[in-house]
Amino acid sequence: MVNPRTPSVSSWEVAVDNGNAYDMSAVADGAYALGAYHDMVMSANTNSLAVINFAGFFINSSNNPILVEFWEGATWTGGESGAVPTPINRNRLSHNTSKATISVIAYYTTPIVRSGGTLLTTLTIYSGATSFNFANLANLMEKWTLDPSKSISVRLRNSAATSSSVSARMLWSEAAV
View 1: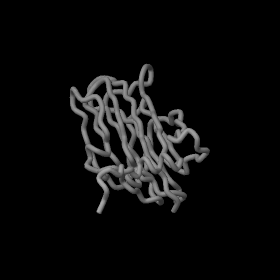
View 2: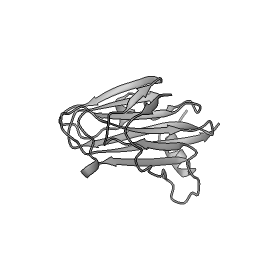
View 3: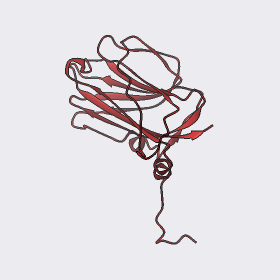
View 4: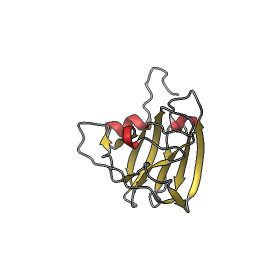
């Protein structure tokens, strides 16, 4: 029998304590605001070096609606390469670095074109909503373990007729293959 006074520790907290949890943010604002019907794509590819346990995705937008798609194994073309954010280890005492190759495909020129891949889930942020935890809204529970041989992409599409400032934050933990 489980002692009700024993605190439960989530796998996310364990990953943070072990130095295997990461955080990455990207922002499209000012001169680089997400144009009408344009995309920003955040991708991670573990190159079979680690299993990514996707823990969450947060988004804020100044103009709604924003279409959010979560893809596995998709290839993206068009647009321009943005400055790639560096994943931050959530345990600041750890010297571990992320094994995932992270990229952000820019959002300020032409719409991005997708080829191939599997659409895992889609959500839309409607007018009035400004942020959400992607993992909880998609009923993904605490984490979603992803195939280390396939790239993972979160695509944000500004579905409004005007530009929008968008910020996105991705949280994940990694385990050895």
